[in-house]
Length: 213
Length: 213
DNA sequence: TAGATTGTTAATCGATTAACAATC
DNA sequence: TAGATTGTTAATCGATTAACAATC
Image (tube, rainbow over all chains, first blue to last red; front, side, top):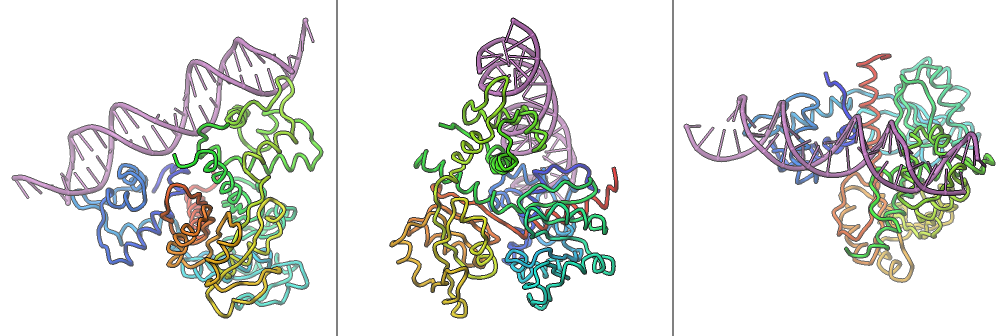
């Protein structure tokens, strides 16, 4: 359906989705690009351009149906699918995501956690028992695994990702501080917390240099 | 020193910093924009443009000193400063960051954790006792607090951020799934994990539609 | 119908890439 | 000096904004 969609648009889609969910919760049925733009701090023009990457969903003289657009963008994002996720690394990040209650409701389900540390193997994270990483190959072959969350040390992430690729996994949510080198047919999304914090630090330095302009 | 720096450049700075640290670890002393570009998957031209936002740090016919450039970018990012951070919310995300061992070595130190849940207050996270949020005002007045990590439910994040702003906090690392509305003189960096996962989901949908192009 | 607001084309703006003189 | 590579200007490309005809 959608042809080429720029990275800039893709990054904005989840924000559209979130704001539309909020509007729905507030009982708003209809919204114009103008009003949605004010809410999201985007121009009305940009909102219309973005939405029209995926086809005409508004009605002239009326605006957009909040529910309709939310459903539509949810479908584009694929959150109406159930994604089965395994977590590699039973450390704090892995546990934090596994026990987050916001993902299971949104199409993402953690089906297993793996670690190689005997201290962690066998422990319980919100009802999921951390397994020995030796079981990884068998598990992936016997179950559907859409996404692998990599929350292992940087040193291990590349080889582990390659191993998972060999087992057929094609979606990687990478929390390790490195750039994975994988074939073209995988989807990777990075969460580099260290880099995020460095950007914050940079912004704070800038504020110091240009106080109250 | 640096004039206007585009958001695109800012977002790349931590990646420069990481790659230069890696090169240093590998014992590389000097690198050209060409070679650094291949490593970072950027064009040599872009690398020279980026670096020259902050002044000439290379030497014609030679390239860049790895150590010198790493130090320089570290300084630009402000990671040679010590940033004192408090964590709001003693849940899994807060605990994961607090117990991460990669931040304390890089100029960021967690000095306190606050929660309003009696079950969490008094528990120990890597030597830091979770405090009652009632103590927040006093703590911030008695200590230096550069950054507040917001790992509380979305509903509480805005009012809590405003409260912290009132106490003088100007740096916010926001993990709550909403856009904070704060005065111009604050620095905010968002980590929206739910949005990151949605982007991954979108990319996976696209791969399905255009297999092996 | 008249008013409002979209979908879409054109204009602008900014970021990336290319080119090359300066210089180590 | 000759070769290499930067710093910087110019050209290209892409994304955002503006404008307006189509239409609900």
